[in-house]
Length: 54
Image (cartoon, rainbow, N blue to C red; front, side, top):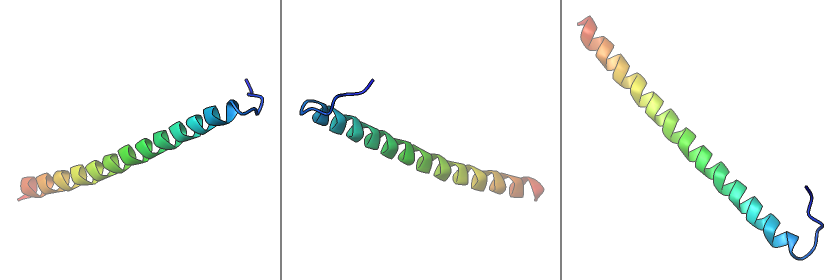
């Protein structure tokens, strides 16, 4: 439902926007951590395969 754009709605809107920005940052951080971990896992897997092939 929509707020009438009164003085009361604006701080609510700002709160909502801030919360969404924080969520976006958290998602971006967790994705970065996941990709780093994935790269590390791939490296570990390659090392293991090398050892197995020796």
